[in-house]
Length: 285
Ligand SMILES: [Zn+2]
Image (cartoon, rainbow, N blue to C red):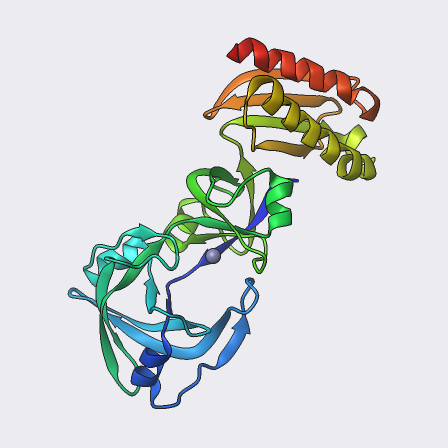
Protein backbone atom coordinates (compact mmCIF):
# COMPACT_ATOMS: atom_id res chain seq x y z
CA UNK A 1 0.00 0.00 0.00
CA UNK A 2 2.96 2.35 0.42
CA UNK A 3 4.38 1.82 -3.06
CA UNK A 4 4.96 4.55 -5.59
CA UNK A 5 5.86 4.51 -9.28
CA UNK A 6 9.43 5.69 -9.82
CA UNK A 7 10.09 7.68 -12.99
CA UNK A 8 13.47 8.70 -14.31
CA UNK A 9 13.87 12.34 -15.36
CA UNK A 10 16.60 12.67 -17.96
CA UNK A 11 18.34 16.03 -18.48
CA UNK A 12 15.94 18.78 -19.47
CA UNK A 13 15.40 22.54 -19.48
CA UNK A 14 12.59 24.83 -18.31
CA UNK A 15 12.64 28.24 -20.03
CA UNK A 16 11.17 31.68 -19.38
CA UNK A 17 9.04 33.34 -22.11
CA UNK A 18 11.90 35.76 -22.67
CA UNK A 19 14.48 33.00 -23.21
CA UNK A 20 12.07 31.07 -25.49
CA UNK A 21 11.92 34.12 -27.78
CA UNK A 22 15.70 34.64 -27.73
CA UNK A 23 16.42 30.96 -28.52
CA UNK A 24 13.58 30.21 -30.97
CA UNK A 25 12.45 33.60 -32.32
CA UNK A 26 10.02 36.40 -31.52
CA UNK A 27 6.52 35.22 -30.57
CA UNK A 28 7.56 31.55 -30.50
CA UNK A 29 5.35 29.21 -28.47
CA UNK A 30 6.52 25.82 -27.21
CA UNK A 31 5.17 22.76 -29.06
CA UNK A 32 3.67 20.03 -26.88
CA UNK A 33 5.01 16.67 -28.03
CA UNK A 34 3.93 14.54 -25.08
CA UNK A 35 2.11 15.14 -21.78
CA UNK A 36 4.08 14.16 -18.67
CA UNK A 37 2.81 12.44 -15.53
CA UNK A 38 2.39 15.72 -13.65
CA UNK A 39 -0.75 17.49 -14.95
CA UNK A 40 0.01 20.49 -17.18
CA UNK A 41 3.66 19.53 -17.74
CA UNK A 42 4.73 18.46 -21.22
CA UNK A 43 7.77 17.48 -23.24
CA UNK A 44 8.37 19.78 -26.22
CA UNK A 45 9.58 19.35 -29.78
CA UNK A 46 12.12 22.13 -29.16
CA UNK A 47 15.76 21.32 -28.36
CA UNK A 48 18.78 23.43 -27.38
CA UNK A 49 22.47 22.78 -26.77
CA UNK A 50 24.01 23.33 -23.34
CA UNK A 51 27.53 24.75 -23.54
CA UNK A 52 29.84 24.33 -20.55
CA UNK A 53 33.46 25.40 -20.10
CA UNK A 54 34.65 21.87 -20.88
CA UNK A 55 32.19 20.33 -23.36
CA UNK A 56 28.68 20.72 -24.70
CA UNK A 57 25.60 18.53 -24.55
CA UNK A 58 23.50 18.75 -27.72
CA UNK A 59 19.75 18.48 -28.32
CA UNK A 60 18.52 18.78 -24.77
CA UNK A 61 14.75 18.58 -24.45
CA UNK A 62 12.65 21.56 -23.28
CA UNK A 63 9.80 20.92 -20.84
CA UNK A 64 6.77 23.19 -20.93
CA UNK A 65 5.01 25.32 -19.94
CA UNK A 66 7.23 28.43 -19.66
CA UNK A 67 8.42 29.25 -16.14
CA UNK A 68 9.34 32.34 -14.13
CA UNK A 69 13.03 31.35 -14.11
CA UNK A 70 15.07 29.30 -16.55
CA UNK A 71 16.24 26.05 -14.99
CA UNK A 72 18.56 23.43 -16.44
CA UNK A 73 18.44 20.01 -14.77
CA UNK A 74 21.38 17.68 -15.36
CA UNK A 75 22.85 14.67 -13.58
CA UNK A 76 26.14 15.03 -11.73
CA UNK A 77 27.79 12.95 -14.47
CA UNK A 78 26.55 15.44 -17.08
CA UNK A 79 27.69 18.39 -14.95
CA UNK A 80 31.15 16.82 -14.99
CA UNK A 81 30.97 16.49 -18.77
CA UNK A 82 30.03 20.18 -19.05
CA UNK A 83 32.80 21.17 -16.63
CA UNK A 84 30.60 22.84 -14.04
CA UNK A 85 29.80 22.17 -10.40
CA UNK A 86 26.08 22.04 -9.76
CA UNK A 87 24.23 22.05 -6.45
CA UNK A 88 21.57 19.47 -5.56
CA UNK A 89 18.37 21.45 -5.29
CA UNK A 90 14.62 21.18 -5.34
CA UNK A 91 13.04 22.42 -8.54
CA UNK A 92 12.51 26.19 -8.45
CA UNK A 93 15.36 26.81 -6.00
CA UNK A 94 17.99 28.16 -8.39
CA UNK A 95 19.50 31.12 -6.49
CA UNK A 96 23.28 30.92 -6.66
CA UNK A 97 23.27 27.71 -8.75
CA UNK A 98 25.61 27.05 -11.68
CA UNK A 99 25.87 29.10 -14.92
CA UNK A 100 25.91 27.87 -18.53
CA UNK A 101 25.26 28.97 -22.11
CA UNK A 102 22.20 27.78 -24.04
CA UNK A 103 22.21 27.76 -27.85
CA UNK A 104 18.99 27.48 -29.83
CA UNK A 105 18.26 27.59 -33.58
CA UNK A 106 17.81 31.40 -33.56
CA UNK A 107 19.91 32.76 -30.72
CA UNK A 108 21.81 32.02 -27.57
CA UNK A 109 21.63 33.06 -23.94
CA UNK A 110 24.14 33.01 -21.09
CA UNK A 111 22.53 32.29 -17.75
CA UNK A 112 24.46 33.24 -14.61
CA UNK A 113 22.55 30.70 -12.52
CA UNK A 114 19.90 28.00 -13.05
CA UNK A 115 21.81 24.76 -13.56
CA UNK A 116 21.02 22.21 -10.84
CA UNK A 117 20.95 18.49 -10.17
CA UNK A 118 17.39 17.82 -9.02
CA UNK A 119 16.97 16.57 -5.48
CA UNK A 120 15.16 13.24 -5.60
CA UNK A 121 11.54 13.74 -4.63
CA UNK A 122 8.05 12.34 -4.43
CA UNK A 123 5.01 14.22 -5.73
CA UNK A 124 1.84 13.55 -3.72
CA UNK A 125 -1.66 14.94 -3.45
CA UNK A 126 -2.90 15.66 0.09
CA UNK A 127 -4.93 12.43 0.08
CA UNK A 128 -1.85 10.39 -0.90
CA UNK A 129 0.23 12.03 1.84
CA UNK A 130 -2.49 11.11 4.30
CA UNK A 131 -2.54 7.54 3.04
CA UNK A 132 1.24 7.19 3.28
CA UNK A 133 1.35 8.97 6.66
CA UNK A 134 3.84 11.60 5.46
CA UNK A 135 3.92 15.39 5.32
CA UNK A 136 5.06 18.04 2.87
CA UNK A 137 8.87 18.53 3.04
CA UNK A 138 9.35 15.35 5.09
CA UNK A 139 12.47 13.38 4.22
CA UNK A 140 11.90 9.66 3.73
CA UNK A 141 13.75 6.60 2.56
CA UNK A 142 12.55 4.71 -0.49
CA UNK A 143 13.44 1.17 -1.40
CA UNK A 144 13.49 0.83 -5.17
CA UNK A 145 12.82 -2.74 -6.22
CA UNK A 146 14.85 -3.74 -9.25
CA UNK A 147 17.60 -6.06 -10.36
CA UNK A 148 19.85 -3.85 -8.24
CA UNK A 149 17.49 -3.10 -5.35
CA UNK A 150 18.59 0.11 -3.64
CA UNK A 151 17.41 2.16 -0.66
CA UNK A 152 17.57 5.90 -1.30
CA UNK A 153 17.68 8.24 1.69
CA UNK A 154 17.12 12.01 1.50
CA UNK A 155 13.99 11.76 -0.62
CA UNK A 156 11.85 14.87 -0.15
CA UNK A 157 8.05 14.67 -0.06
CA UNK A 158 6.25 17.43 -1.98
CA UNK A 159 2.50 17.78 -1.51
CA UNK A 160 0.26 19.79 -3.81
CA UNK A 161 -3.37 19.43 -4.97
CA UNK A 162 -2.28 19.45 -8.61
CA UNK A 163 0.34 16.69 -8.33
CA UNK A 164 0.00 13.04 -9.23
CA UNK A 165 1.77 10.45 -7.06
CA UNK A 166 5.18 9.72 -8.62
CA UNK A 167 8.76 9.59 -7.42
CA UNK A 168 11.38 11.26 -9.63
CA UNK A 169 15.04 10.32 -9.81
CA UNK A 170 17.69 11.39 -12.31
CA UNK A 171 19.67 9.18 -14.68
CA UNK A 172 22.61 8.73 -12.29
CA UNK A 173 20.21 7.49 -9.63
CA UNK A 174 18.36 5.32 -12.15
CA UNK A 175 21.64 3.68 -13.15
CA UNK A 176 22.60 3.19 -9.51
CA UNK A 177 19.50 1.05 -9.00
CA UNK A 178 19.40 -0.37 -12.56
CA UNK A 179 15.96 1.12 -13.17
CA UNK A 180 14.54 0.57 -16.61
CA UNK A 181 11.06 1.72 -17.51
CA UNK A 182 8.71 2.50 -14.70
CA UNK A 183 9.56 0.63 -11.53
CA UNK A 184 8.16 0.69 -8.04
CA UNK A 185 9.56 2.13 -4.84
CA UNK A 186 8.44 1.48 -1.33
CA UNK A 187 8.34 4.43 1.07
CA UNK A 188 10.11 3.34 4.26
CA UNK A 189 9.60 4.99 7.56
CA UNK A 190 12.51 6.19 9.62
CA UNK A 191 10.57 6.81 12.82
CA UNK A 192 7.16 5.33 13.28
CA UNK A 193 5.12 2.20 13.05
CA UNK A 194 4.78 -0.16 10.17
CA UNK A 195 1.97 -2.65 10.15
CA UNK A 196 2.17 -5.53 7.76
CA UNK A 197 -1.09 -7.29 7.13
CA UNK A 198 -1.11 -10.76 5.75
CA UNK A 199 -3.17 -12.28 3.00
CA UNK A 200 -6.08 -13.35 5.19
CA UNK A 201 -6.77 -9.81 6.27
CA UNK A 202 -6.21 -7.89 3.06
CA UNK A 203 -8.64 -10.16 1.25
CA UNK A 204 -11.19 -8.20 3.25
CA UNK A 205 -10.32 -4.91 1.54
CA UNK A 206 -13.15 -2.87 3.04
CA UNK A 207 -11.87 -3.41 6.50
CA UNK A 208 -8.43 -2.10 5.62
CA UNK A 209 -9.76 0.95 3.84
CA UNK A 210 -12.69 2.02 5.96
CA UNK A 211 -12.27 0.78 9.50
CA UNK A 212 -8.51 0.68 9.78
CA UNK A 213 -7.89 4.27 8.70
CA UNK A 214 -10.11 5.44 11.58
CA UNK A 215 -8.38 3.10 14.03
CA UNK A 216 -4.98 4.37 12.94
CA UNK A 217 -6.17 7.95 13.44
CA UNK A 218 -7.33 7.06 16.96
CA UNK A 219 -4.03 5.35 17.70
CA UNK A 220 -2.09 8.38 16.51
CA UNK A 221 -4.22 10.69 18.67
CA UNK A 222 -3.79 8.45 21.69
CA UNK A 223 0.00 8.39 21.27
CA UNK A 224 -0.06 12.18 21.10
CA UNK A 225 -2.32 12.56 24.15
CA UNK A 226 -0.74 9.92 26.39
CA UNK A 227 2.92 10.18 25.45
CA UNK A 228 3.18 13.44 23.52
CA UNK A 229 4.65 11.43 20.64
CA UNK A 230 3.97 12.94 17.26
CA UNK A 231 3.86 9.91 15.03
CA UNK A 232 3.39 11.19 11.51
CA UNK A 233 4.42 7.90 10.01
CA UNK A 234 2.18 4.96 10.54
CA UNK A 235 2.48 2.85 7.45
CA UNK A 236 0.27 -0.01 6.54
CA UNK A 237 1.68 -2.61 4.24
CA UNK A 238 0.26 -5.76 2.83
CA UNK A 239 2.48 -8.78 2.80
CA UNK A 240 1.23 -11.64 0.73
CA UNK A 241 3.90 -13.96 2.06
CA UNK A 242 2.57 -14.02 5.60
CA UNK A 243 -0.80 -14.85 7.10
CA UNK A 244 -0.16 -13.07 10.37
CA UNK A 245 0.06 -9.36 11.13
CA UNK A 246 3.41 -7.84 12.04
CA UNK A 247 3.83 -4.51 13.76
CA UNK A 248 7.28 -2.95 13.59
CA UNK A 249 8.33 0.20 15.41
CA UNK A 250 11.29 2.11 14.03
CA UNK A 251 13.19 4.91 15.69
CA UNK A 252 15.53 6.80 13.36
CA UNK A 253 15.77 3.84 11.05
CA UNK A 254 16.47 1.34 13.84
CA UNK A 255 13.99 -1.43 14.57
CA UNK A 256 13.15 -0.95 18.24
CA UNK A 257 10.38 -3.44 18.57
CA UNK A 258 8.52 -6.01 16.52
CA UNK A 259 5.51 -8.09 17.34
CA UNK A 260 3.39 -10.63 15.50
CA UNK A 261 -0.32 -10.86 16.01
CA UNK A 262 -1.44 -14.23 14.73
CA UNK A 263 -5.10 -13.74 15.40
CA UNK A 264 -5.32 -10.10 14.33
CA UNK A 265 -8.59 -9.00 12.85
CA UNK A 266 -10.90 -6.03 12.94
CA UNK A 267 -12.47 -7.23 16.19
CA UNK A 268 -9.34 -7.12 18.29
CA UNK A 269 -7.66 -4.07 16.85
CA UNK A 270 -8.39 -2.18 20.09
CA UNK A 271 -6.34 -4.78 21.94
CA UNK A 272 -3.53 -4.49 19.42
CA UNK A 273 -3.52 -0.69 19.83
CA UNK A 274 -3.23 -1.12 23.62
CA UNK A 275 -0.28 -3.50 23.24
CA UNK A 276 1.44 -1.09 20.84
CA UNK A 277 0.93 1.90 23.12
CA UNK A 278 2.12 0.16 26.27
CA UNK A 279 5.22 -1.10 24.43
CA UNK A 280 6.04 2.38 23.12
CA UNK A 281 5.52 3.73 26.64
CA UNK A 282 8.02 1.19 27.91
CA UNK A 283 10.56 2.35 25.34
CA UNK A 284 10.14 6.05 26.01
CA UNK A 285 9.08 6.52 29.60
ZN1 LIG B 1 9.24 15.74 -10.20
